[in-house]
Length: 408
Ligand code: ATP
Ligand code: MG
Image (cartoon, rainbow, N blue to C red; front, side):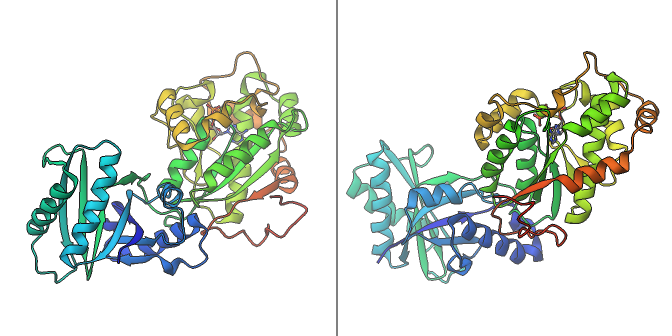
């Protein structure tokens, strides 16, 4: 009797030596989360694969969800059969026939044995099964450039037979690398930066600065929607929303116009640091790319980082705008980011922002501000949105149950 399963393969966690078990468990939990399963143990870990039974699922939808989980190299829709020769053949005939219905004219069989005492050598399995498939489907054998490759993996006392693979994002399972605070505008770049760091195993806590009360709520709404997209990875825990308009106004009244943007950014970083303290996050993340706009010159980046106490990661620093936009489309945030919205940074904007600020100059301008009080104002007035994640726990000081400040 054949049963259906999704076979989830990974590349990189295989390299982790004795940590492999921990990584596999993390991925197992995150896959279960993606399917909304309360019990991750239904997913078996079998010789460096994760086997997800699909009996109660719509296979197409389940595979699409599994294939968007960080850490997944690819997902195959497999028939699971006994290693009895006829059973393998029949499963292969079924898999190749399906591909033929989609237009395949030639096929190849690739067989592999792992962790098994199965006596028949792989080449023999491939030859025998290939012969039967050729007879029953009428398709031609092509071992170099086949339209469809049917894999037969014999593992322990079972055989997994599959011809269709869906590519995953690769990377590492969210939650395998600790926590970071990402500065999330609702623009194109920072959601991509956050996604990339999630793909490297980090858990992201976002912080968004809106121009309210001097703007409408459109950027807050957009960043919430972006959060819903990132939530699907399992690696987004929460987004803090800071109403920044009054603080920007205060800066604009006290500081030279050309330094305003840098002072906004430095205040953002200080607030993000305060959040990171509470969240026990170990780094900050931004969406800057070198030279893209005035605030992203080397001098200005240095002036911003001067007030950070943690490493500031910029996953997009060497990427071009087109590449970033293409990635945003793939992730699913592009359309949200390009909707009309009011961005806080255009508030009180000077005509000619400084492009090569000297740190001493910025320090001097900032010394006229009550920076500590401004950070406290921001932190005590912020609210947050919690997202479903198998790896995030809210900090004790700011629990999810705080109805006055958290909203879903
Ligand atoms: P993005 O597309 O991410 O908005 P950008 O090209 O508009 O970036 P900047 O406006 O210079 O570039 O912002 C640089 C980075 O600073 C952003 O990628 C983001 O990490 C952070 N940032 C800017 N504005 C905000 C904001 N309103 N809230 C949170 N973070 C912000
Ligand atoms: Mg922006």
